Image (cartoon, rainbow, N blue to C red; front, side, top):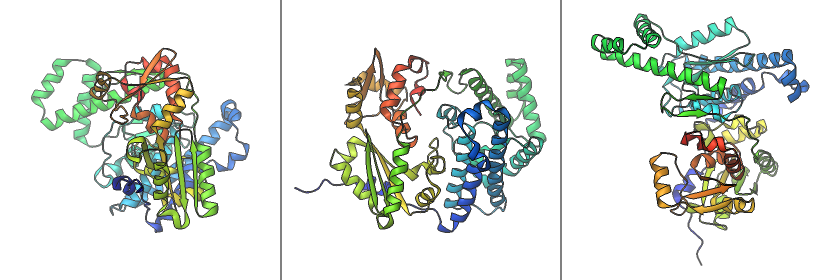
Length: 448
């Protein structure tokens, strides 16, 4: 009997890729600045002190922000040369900026989703980068404890030109405009926003150029998004100006089971052996390949998956390093892995593959007391029309229920499992147990 054939498209996707090797010293320096600015306080750090000691907390964040800002300045220095960044530099800089952003957001995906608008980030050489950089430096001079992050550097912060967080953890989003024409547009937008007069807007549309009208509309949308975000972060509820839907972030945040420690042990084992390591955590399959197996280990991983199911139909599979170019996926530098392992992953000395098995997920959920059934065609069709990206397994959607609550398995659950280290059974359980998550009126609450 012949061995099952591995689909070439999946095999290619899991192949080892690497950043330009000569960038490694810069990467190490940027990671140290972005992630370890507060290192001198780590020996005194514990969660209780960070919560209760206001002076210690402020000093901790001041040092962390100083490191983050220094990392941003190093990247800005390279960008300001005017020489276009190559692909490796772009990936590295985006990953560092994203790492900073996730740190500023406290790693909370629920907030990150609200500032990501699924837009393509601008080319830094053709944006108003120098103007925004100047404002960021001015903000830093005015408040040495703050971190004014230039949002165009990131892959997912798409509200405002600058996201600034103070040492007291107050967050603000700043829109930067310069020039006489932009001032005119801002004046029009602010008058309309303050007055709410539709007649004024009609006059603007008749008397101003199409470019000015378009810019005014863009400014109004940006201001609405920033207001929405401010209200959401302060009250936990706000109306999304882009969708018209009410968004809720329930309290408290639920603890979710994760596989982070298993990943750390797996990668350390592979590095120590300079060979391979393999582990299964419920429906999560993971393999780490170092040394000579760094380039071919992904085939071993796929063959191992084939022993339990159909690689193409039963699994959702990624390379761990894919997070470097997927918005809303924390980069390798945010994962809590050892520094040397992070560098091995980014510079081609290790390849790690992760998979979620849908049959295993069904089995685990049923053992945990959930009921699982296939979605009807009508339910699946409605989900697709609503744009909530249902997971289709062997042509059918899946419905999970617990204690009278039911939900469809959506791509957001799998995204959390693959890119945020969360156990999908735990994610499903907390959605089902937290009824406010299912009744918020916004289908995207089930997305990452």
